[in-house]
Length: 250
Image 1: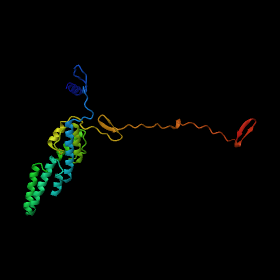
Image 2: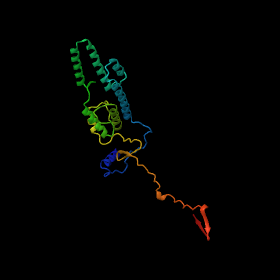
Image 3: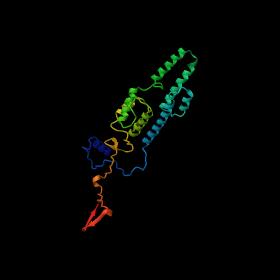
Image 4: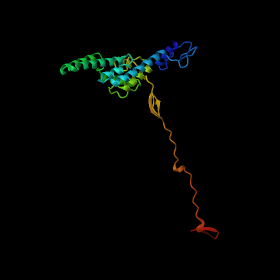
């Protein structure tokens, strides 16, 4: 415990203060080191839950706008008992209610359909769409945490859910679903600094928390002045003759 306190104070004061005990350790000390490859049971359970949420979200997104009750039933059978199963059941109930109203007059059918959708929206059912402003705020907070949701465009899709999943894995925050909610926004705002690790692409390196291009090493080129000089061309002896002991050439 004292090691944790010492490390926290050292970090909070940017290395200016280090609480003293009769030890100066900054890391954890074990009389017997943990077994290699040991996994925290809480982290394992969180990862398993997150994997189920990601699979359910993908399945639900594929059929959320379907008007075929059979399609919804088939997907519902594959979902775990969680938030996406509730959305599927609510969608199925709406479709079945609309099917029963098919024999009624157009006016009555439209009125009942409107009431059903209003009730669904009030209960957060499948017809209730999150506020685009809320989604944009969540996407910006994910960007601040280093978890890339793509552009903050107010559209919640696969990339935003993937970024939220990475946030959960790296922060240890347990999520009820991968959908945008006001409590989620508040949780993101409580996070201090980068959460997701920086992943640089090919040809880039990390520098001061950003990905920058790797420096290139240029090969020096030889200048014209450094080229070896060629020997002066000697005159051909085919048009030369000697006169008074001297070589004379045309």
